Length: 198
Picture (tube, rainbow, N blue to C red):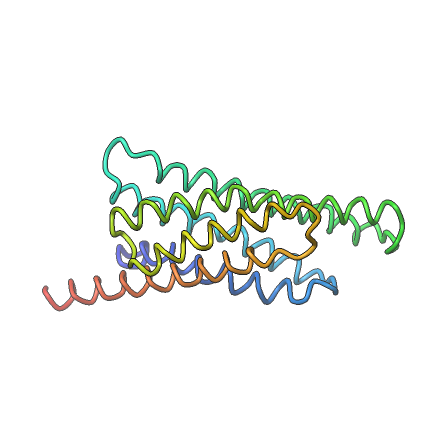
């Protein structure tokens, strides 16, 4: 793998993650095995994106900074909690548990609770990214502001304990897509300038 390809993998994973997640989940009413696999792989691809973003934040923050590590740890925690929400849903369909039964409701509620809990660490992740981005100018100012807005939306949405709809998660997916596109474009432009200079 070439040196120019490797830095692009992080942003590419960040583009595939929200796109695949959005299309795989759909309206959430119909289960299909391919959707479950696609959504799970989409979440796994969020991890390289977070690692790449953290490396940029750490470089901008300088030695002794801890916000970049906070962004990585909380981002990974949020993704893992969201991944955990897939297990009860998968169990429902593997065991053929009838809709409306107590066991179905319990497993479905467990999946929903795990999704809701994932919003807390994701809010901290976006908040840490926003602080470093706005202070260190590692991302455009509008994207740093978008990070802050996403963090607030995630925190507010997480406060609605009985919510069955999590619009802030959709905003997080949009933020990830926008951030990844900016980083990929910047990486592409940087490698083009190096190629012209040599």
